[in-house]
Image (cartoon, rainbow, N blue to C red; front, side, top):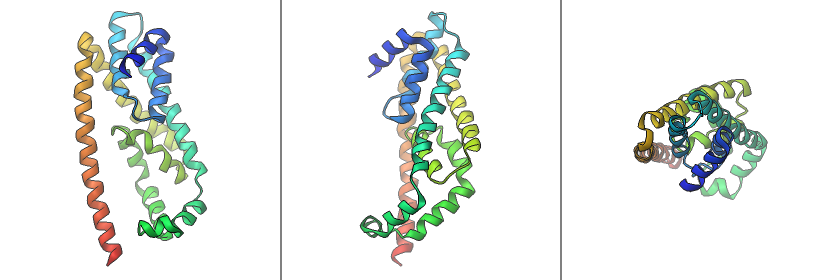
Length: 202
């Protein structure tokens, strides 16, 4: 995978960066840290410009996020209500009223959630779907997504610039960060799920 990413970027430059980051948003297993840090390194040994790499990556990120947001918009509340009223809802001990609760929660905290999730691997892509399903204002979604992804892209690209030929070591550190972040998130998600189900069974 890493060799394929490097080859695409070597051949297509800024366009390759944008396309790879767009696909990374749609298919989270593609490592953005490889794309961005190598992109930063390329600016030290080619005519590529740091800020144009960041701009290309940000455009790609927003494009991928918009695609997933659009998918979320296609999921109607009526469909979710029907889904939770059936076997799946009963198996998960979820009720149609939980849809309304989730919608109200997203309306209150959705903006901060969308922004912060841009810094969490996997979730930085997937958060676009519930944002679309919750019918989050498109303008607000675009501003928060652009701001969050621009910060993430800038940090990783500049780390690649600073590391130079050692950009691969940055990828390893970011990989460790990803594992720790996901573990912490998974822990809190599990705690919240336990609390929710305890209340539901009571």
